[in-house]
Amino acid sequence: MTVFTKFLCASSGIALALLGTAAQADVVFWSTQARPAEEAQAMRDNVLAGFSGTVDYQPNEDGPWLTRLQAELQAGSGSIGVLGALHGGFSALDPDTLVDLDDLGVASSSDSFNALARLGTDNMQYVPWMQASYIMAANREALQYLPAGADLNALSYDQLIEWAAAVQAAVGEPKFGFPAGPDGLRHRYFQGYLYPSYTDGVVRTFASDEAVAAWEMFRRLWAHTNPASTNFNFMQEQLLSGDAWIVWDHSSRLANAFNERPDDFVAFPAPAGPTGRGFMPVLAGLAIPTTAPDQDAARALVQYLLQPETQIATLRATNFFPVVEVELPGDLPPSVQAAGAAIAAMSGAPDANPGLLPAGLGGKGGDFNRIFIDSFERIVLAGQDIRTVLDDQRPRLAAIMQETGAPCWAPDAPSEGACPVE
Image 1 (cartoon, rainbow, N blue to C red):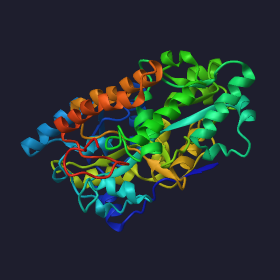
Image 2: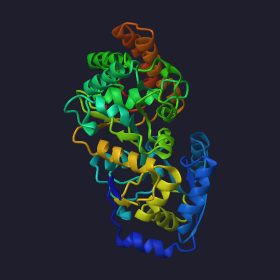
Image 3: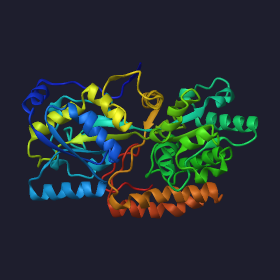
């Protein structure tokens, strides 16, 4: 069995009492997560069925989720009992519209995540629910070419480049793979991995000298990358086909490779740069709106969802990992075992430097992502001058931040008002 530890959960007497008093409650669970039909049904059948009350699980896209919630808040009453969303979804809300949850006794082992859940207040406005992340994976054939003395769980970017170059020299073609296709998550790599690892920021440091060094490094890595990566979307496909031996992607987009051929692949943390081991945790939480019709029942459901056995059931249903201390069963799919160990090693690394998902951008999220995609295409694919490109993109990024008023998120230093592009 594997132990995956991220958050610690303590049950207070008040919370335990709530579990008993809400035995017959009916709770509307309004969530942006577990939306695919198969996942939603697994939530109903395998996760929520064990709750002592009745739960109406209703997943929806971010837009409709927010629209209905805002309508109920404006009306001063509603039917939603519990909210499920990513951190960015909650950060867009007025904390006064959410119920303080300190008395549930749920706490994170990470001070930074506890602070996030407070949404700038003195109280927990949501509690962590589940998490995922992006990891590295490799064909075991590539391990023989690791640089001398390199630790797979503590690589630097220089070592990754050296490793990719050695594989290319040995097999005669580049075997690093990157999801740079139309549906690939390349923008999340730049926002959560490259920039935090080299600049200790994302927005403030976008056009810094450190950012120039970051793009120079990625150019060196691209020299050993399969050029067909501009068509790669889910890197599990390239691992299975052999088109790539070393890859980066979201853990869910690598799952099929580990489940189909678990003995052929290994998962490991992202590399570190000069300012730490940048990584992007995808953190989902649970909250209760002030308009919840039965707050006791809603609190009982939140407490139930944080129980270790429920967290394991949620993992099986969604492939999102527990946020409380649990011992993972040995019968979980190989992809879960592999990704769980890699995420734990990455988030627990002494040089871990989390870069959060962009928050507060509203409908400008796509434009924000486009800044990083365009920079990649111009700098890496078109070979344009790095400083020229970043200086050209800087005012575009600044305009997005000013229009949305979005404050800085980690690892950028906090801001009063819109995050500045320095």
